[in-house]
Image 1 (spheres, helix red, strand yellow):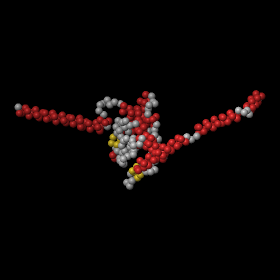
Image 2 (cartoon, one colour):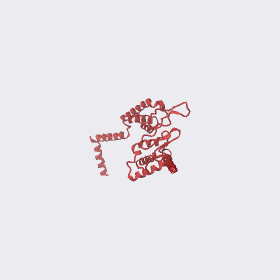
Image 3 (cartoon, helix red, strand yellow):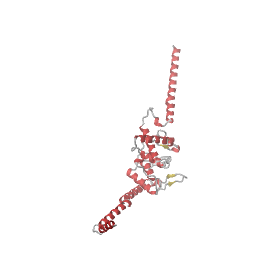
Image 4 (cartoon, one colour):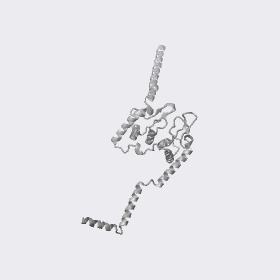
Length: 290
């Protein structure tokens, strides 16, 4: 008990010392600064930068997109029932804008059954600004990061497994439109499934996520982000695989192969038969004349 009293007395004397107040003040400042750093909102510069980007995107939108999609991206309907000049973009998210604008499909020269891919009208900065503006209207799918659609960080065994899983998913869900080789094909009402060869992984991921034009929407509830990544890995793998069978005929399967068989195969046989028949007739005539 006497030891505890002596210790308490020493502590009491130190608390009354001239440096005790400075130490307590210093510890309080450190604690307050740490809490502020952890809980403070984003820096004002970052918020100002986001605001400027959205403002730039809105200006670009009003200049190049509002004619079809409306001044508030609400879409524009025509006199024809159920037909829109441009659909509403509220809630489509930044991913849809990045896909459509980044691949040059938007803006369209005129409404049509499908927007073809062409050279982009806007550069990367302008595309990002348009995506930021549309994303500010309502929540929607965000632009994916490279880690979302790339298997670069996986081991060799994990890559092979991802490609095998992606092949199963693609053959089950995508071959009806894009063909088993990803070469694309015709669709009803003037549309078509585009060729997937050489398409960047980011745009394939965004197309799966947002479902552009006639393509169905594969949300993360239908296909997980890992499933989408595996599909992209499979498509990359079939482009790198050599064609051991010779001519691919566009990779369109029985359509091009059947056409080739009829025109070249049967056509050659018919030509050979005609040639044999004509030469046989000539030989008989020459023998009769002799």
